[in-house]
Image 1 (cartoon, rainbow, N blue to C red):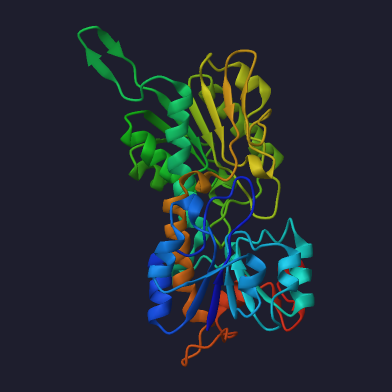
Image 2 (cartoon, rainbow, N blue to C red):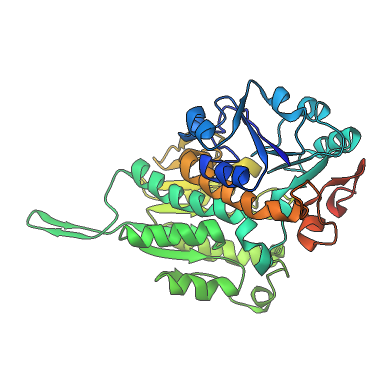
Amino acid sequence: MKIAVLKDAGGDEARVAATPETVKGYVKSGHSVSVVKDAGKAANFADEDYKEAGANIATSNAAAVKAADLVFSVTGGTKKLIAGMKKGAGITGLLNPTDNPDYAAACAKAGVTAYALEYIPRISRAQSMDVLSSQSNLSGYRSVVEAGSVYGRAFPMMMTAAGTVAPAKVFVMGAGVAGLQAIATARRLGAVTTATDVRPAAKEQVASLGAKFIAVENEEFKEAETAGGYAKQMSDEYRKLQAELTATHIAKQDIVVTTALIPGRPAPKLIDKDMIASMRPGSVLVDLAVERGGNVEGAKKGEIVTTKNGVKIVGWLNWPSRMASDSSNMFARNLKNFLPLVTAEDGSYAPDWDDEIIQGCALTRDGEVVHERLK
């Protein structure tokens, strides 16, 4: 199989879809690999490292994809690039198909099979391929580290001869992968940590990390999780009750991290201006959902906003890319584990269309858009 590794464009994208380590494994398995010049530079992987691993260095994305059977990317490249791929080839990445349906149409027109890695089913067998989890894990960690930097005070209690420093109070909203890692990080740093989520299963997970769970635990709460493990859209009545509880709790917090996302929908608004006004000067809000509209009223993409009462709202984009080396390593290993599903016994490119993972993440096939979410 001929594999091409793109240099993902974009001002805030520093990740790369293959590392010298994974490339070495592909070459050892008999595949040929072309890595675009400087594809890994922003993640601290030099072209020389890829050459040493057995890769060829392509001059551009367009040159790399011409003969490729399978293209590895983080963001999927452009529609123009897809048009330059050979018919029957495949491309992987975080393709954002619900927000960018024209991309899938372009792949279908070019006869290219597009694999949206964010659509990989959340089943046990696919855990090692779950790019959403691997990347969200780092986002949760980074959110607390950067919150601490913006906060500018200590996290743990410190008892010194000069007096006692009170521990920071950290509240994490959403206990998915990112939220759980944020909780764990805040606890490791010594903060008094609380968390909330609408999914009943999250209560035990939060407690296992040593944090206190905050939620309205009524009958609707008990049914608030989909079969895929995501949070359901809650009723207006439940959201009102939860907002009242949250407002009381937030007023006492130093740092709040919001992580609430519902696939294919705008991010739910969790914190309004009145809640923000109740917080102490110097408090910090980190909105990990700002790319989809944000959980915090007043959050701005790519900026830190300081409110009139001195609360700082952090709206950085693409959190995994802020730890590009680690996130690339994880992303690349996810792809390495995905590769056997599109590889025949002789090593050629041949997706297994009977496999539920391929069925779950393939957007296009034989010139048609086939994914149910896009029909």
